[in-house]
Length: 426
Image (cartoon, rainbow, N blue to C red; front, side, top):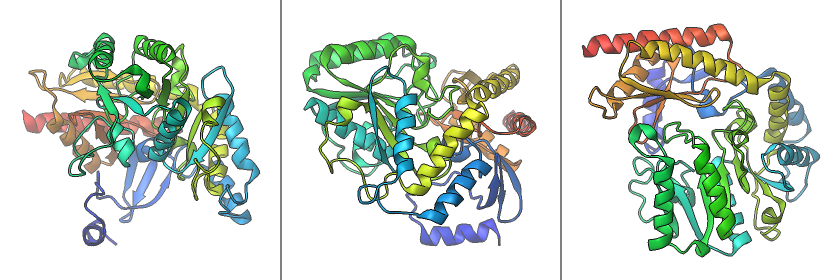
């Protein structure tokens, strides 16, 4: 079986709206390595977009799923509940930042978590408006798509977005936008277009994911918290990509001296199985009436079993600290490459959520070189993802469990790929 043969079948069978980063069809995977149907090995610096933080097929996660598989696969928690759903909720209530009583609801995807966070905020406040940030990504359903701060490819062709959604700039010093600029824009919004007493929520990613891995400055987080407190607005932290150890903390908001009211969780929590959650202030989480939250597959027994195992693995293997160590090594290697590659304008990101942004000699975004490096690395056996509003950022999301030798091998491939691209462009 060849990748090219399957690709032909895919083109005939699958909607083109499902974008493809590669034409590599996976046969099996283990930790940070994947093997395609032709038997070729790749080092995975994508981790399913920060999903398999504990690596592909971690033995403890697999064992937990296998044990649950023998018991039951589905009852719908709203019909026949099960204890390990409640146990996982208790663990998240204790772990999510915030010195207040919390409750949790489980859903299936990150977009669904954000949708429900907005529903909860509206129910708790009796208001409708939501403020999000340019460059943010919150999902592809209509509410989350409206919150997402990037048009192409997400919003193109889908008509009007949901009403009462407003955007302000997100800080990115490389692009001349500061935290002060963001706050000025918010104050201007309140003066000209939106009464703050109509705002249900402000949603922010502690580190923008698809937007380019820009960490939110501490002064912005503190100011948003103060503004939310002043006007009775719900602060939502979208930790779908930043959570579950990726930034060197179990949740990225642990790095700040303020806490959000609601936190959305997905991706890494399920260890590769679909699971998402909203965890937040108990009083807000109880604002919706019975039946207002949940879903047929929300908190599927297999996913819940995997998630409990994921939290065990993170604690037992000290993966938060490991994320910091691996991230430090990666940044050092990238800085060494940058010394001879001025096109790398900035290296950033907390823990093992690291990015390199490529610019031209004139200081303009350089998506052409970014994509060329990604494709060259792929040819050499390294899977990379790009991101950013301009498509000029390479993000590094290898599993937190990646062997150090495999990480070093992957960075060697990256270095060689950049050198090859530069030689062709010279």
